[in-house]
Each structure stands twice: as structure tokens, then as C-alpha cells.
Length: 195
Ligand SMILES: [Zn+2]
Image 1 (cartoon, protein in one colour):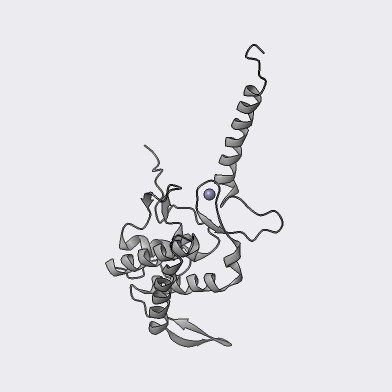
Image 2: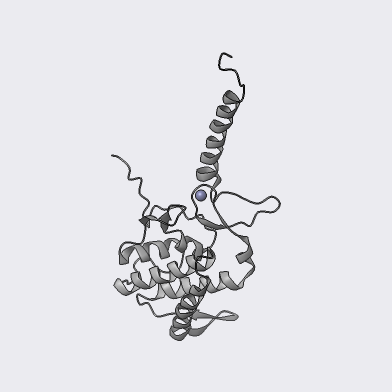
């Protein structure tokens, strides 16, 4: 096999439109919730993904605690966003509180910003802040589930709204599927097997 079809932290599509949703989308699951594949398998996966999202440097330190925390935040946020367990917002808040406790306010130009020491918890701190930004901001009402792959994404389009996380991948696949189905329906709809 020349290519590995299983997505990894370095190859998975980042179509969530928000860093907190790209974290949620590291789990590939069936519609009934059965987990098929988890992109976050090692501590290094946390840094690779966080780096791709612009949250930390590529050589940021990592460890087993970072992996456990990233999964804990991800699973709680998933439960909140999909209404599986809205009470899980308390876990999201715990991660956010830990992030605020570890943060320093540092002047950056004309404003102040939160900064964290370069330890293994920083990616999860940044994701926790992003998660609360999502839950408290205008993007929350624009979170949709992709018709093709079940991933969550922010729909910032105007008008009818997007149905797929990515037109190139899921949109095209869904359109092909519908095309085949329409052809099948047309053939089946003639009512006369001799035609
Ligand atoms: Zn999709």
C-alpha cells in the first residue's frame, strides 16, 4: 500500500472552521457513536495537531497527561455540542479554569493577552479557551454536523447553509451518492421491467 487511508494528526482534514471543532473531529465515529478511529493516540499527536492549528510550536513539550487532558476536554465538548450530555459543560469549565489559573496576562502591543509557560499542558489550555469562546460566542448557533462524515463544522456561509464540512470531500461524495440513487430511482420508477 502506497498510502495509509487512516487519518493521523498530521494528515486529518481541518475542516471544522474552529480549533475547538477540529479537536472534536479527531474522533471518527459511526452515527450511533461507536468509535472507529481516534486520531489522538500518542502525546506527540496532541502537539502535531495543536501546531497545525497554530496553537503551539512544532517542538512543544508533551506527555501522557497532555494526551489524557486533550481527550477529556474533547469528549466533554463533543457531548455538549451534540446534546448527548449537556452537563459535560462542567468538565469543559474545569479545563478552562485550569487554563486561566496557569495563564499570565502579558502586554502585547496595545493590548494584553494570555500566555502560558511552554509545558505540556499549553495545547489543552489553548483548546479550553477556544472551546469556551465557541460556547459563548456567535459561532455556536452556526455549528452543524456534516451530512457526509458526521464531523462538526462552523457554517459561516450566508443563505441556505452548508451541509458538508468540505465540498471537495464529503460534498462530492454525497452528490455522487445522490446521483447514483436518482438513477436507480428513475430505473425503478418506470414500473415496466421490459422497458
Ligand atoms: Zn464531512
